[in-house]
Image 1 (spheres, helix red, strand yellow):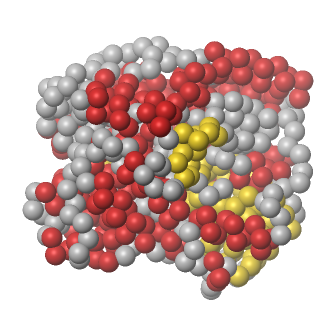
Image 2: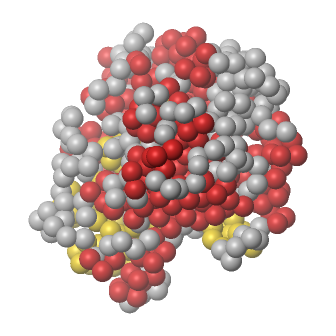
Image 3: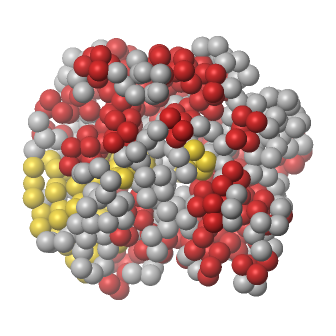
Length: 602
């Protein structure tokens, strides 16, 4: 990306490496990360390619603010065509790997073709080598990371790799960095596995400096003050991590229970898996990504077993807790460790097991298919942990089916309606019947069921930047669009979404001014995000999107929440969707209009 780094184009079939520069015009329009990765995918791949075939591309892309000293400027994106959804996949991860790539002088890695044998890539500044990874095939993310640091002879290097789930082409496979950080959603790890690529190891010895250091210093000072003064980013997340949301969301009656059959737990039961309980009984220490003042990560250890590791986050606590009918947090902690080691998306894994439990309890999944494994009953921590491992290893008949995700699992047993997913990607930990805006975001998310592409929970529950009624629908199409556009820009900039609890469009514009030297305004920042959102939609339309893809599971619109503070509610997405399309400048069928595309320079 010019002065922000170059492009490494690596053809795994041919074993070649080429360096390219990116025109400044593309950087200004798409930044980096998610936006630039999507632009490359749209331009360089043909419609209808097999996500697990050699014609698909796998793109690692950082943003212009990654590693540049901005608070929480540490993110990188993995962009590809998703084997889970068939649409665009762009999965975000933090830690230190993205900053290391920036220090090595590279902004984008475009991976093409398929290696003839297991391979890893070693990047040290300008030196790029393709090396044999055969001895690492079959090893988990922890083992792989430790072995690779020995193999490259540099303990300061950073490793991004796949584990057994990626090798097995699980559609829930993640790309893991620094052992426990995950680019988790959309099956990006399976695409990496399909290319026989085990890891990308990076060591950068250069410095990443802002273009306007004096202005950047003032911007960072103001941003830090806002982040620390904010109740979420400065108090709640540092104190209890993301799992502080358990009691908060449960109190709204929107904490999905037993595969979304219900949306509320008794308070004393929910508290057993809360962030407060995690801090009190299991926390070893807090942890942070590069340059992050929030430090939301948790290093934990179990009480019942001699196991320790990173996590779980809120979504993971829920997916391996309430979603599976459990209140005890310890099985969820263990399942989280398994997912980190085997490289699985924890949301996809937990919700898939929850779907399997409902299938089993309703008699749709025969006992014979368990092949001697524990019965898949709601509330069984033993079954959840066991089947998480089988899923990660794609072991046995049911393990292989679970590794395909909940939609294909439920479809196999004749009941796809029991998959709580959008575009075949599992829904996160907020019931859309009790929080109307997040349901609209789920339905319209370009990468399938997702909360972090338009986190209206910030407004509807946390009151940031303004409090809106979670049960109301008025104004939610506009709110959803604003959050989605802002997130599109943040994901493309290289900064962490959690900064948006305290920062607004003007703050991000100032950060880009200091980091890049551009004279960019808040409205231009929002337009970048809108451009990214529309480009993703164009990609999906090219790959077969129809309006039916913007639907929630029928349970969300047809079955009212049976008890709790949101009792009697269903999602009003069908009523909100036409208004959302209109606010986006799309036609009644959800296609961007010619006028909108011209306005965005698309």
